[in-house]
Length: 398
Image 1 (tube, helix red, strand yellow):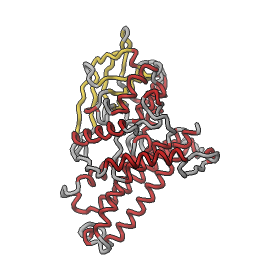
Image 2 (cartoon, one colour; image 1 turned 180 degrees about the horizontal axis):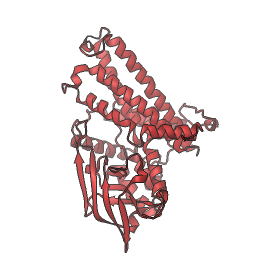
Image 3 (cartoon, helix red, strand yellow; image 1 turned 45 degrees about the vertical axis):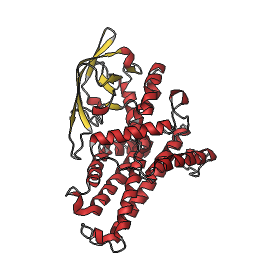
Image 4 (tube, helix red, strand yellow; image 1 turned 180 degrees about the vertical axis):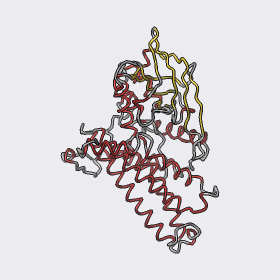
């Protein structure tokens, strides 16, 4: 899939023989999973569903495709991850693993003991992770974080608060960013740690968001002791690790959003087709032109998702060639925001009043969640600034 033109921005999207063989292997596995049961609406059911799917994928050799074999992966190029998400989304399977970006950080910065201890059970679904970065006063500006840790013998003692911590309620481990040197400049003042969620002094307080789910939580650290051996990388290397983490988090290929978007496209396509040419089932909604207008809008969303898919594939190919930069992830993130929010509007309008009367809970969830796409993993404004200054070479403001 990668050729000599990659450096100039061109990619051959034809499957190589190895990719073709993998796609056939994947489709055979998917055939055994059909029909696909619906994703549960409740939090506990959703987590159980995704965990079970992750476990089945791992047993079939379909998790951690681009991670080294010695840690439980398959050792494939990153493009194979895109093939996996493409095929899963095409049949309505959701992405089972949304925290793969944390595993990549452990692979890059963790020591050998940490890699062998934490990567295999993450790949198999035995252990789940969350990311403790954002704080009430430090969201997009991580440099403002105030959670601190001081060294006391062979342990760090952590005090502070984190918020917007995704799936902390079900996590076993937290990748935690804290300030360890109050005198150092911001970019050299932070360190990163692996902390067990059940550590004494750590309180997890889930809260309900506008979607109705309790996916997020606050974390409170009250004299939580973390051994020095749990530090990822060197002391003061936390900012660099955090930037790597959010770079992977911004990549739709690393967090599985391509599969989820394609799954939504497939579900909405079925709704439009079921309405028929006259669109009688859609006339009750707000779309005055009925089925034709909605079909055209859905077609545009299909194009948007395909553009995002091939751009992500290009980014993964650049990673294989050693050409990837943080700017690639920012461009991917901006494309994802546009695509997900436009699709959320289509889904909302397609189902009409049924969304507000509770008849279409998944559509309402998708729409409300899409509104957060421009904030999590670094706000849209920050991504635009990164693209403007680092890719386009535009000057910063006065």
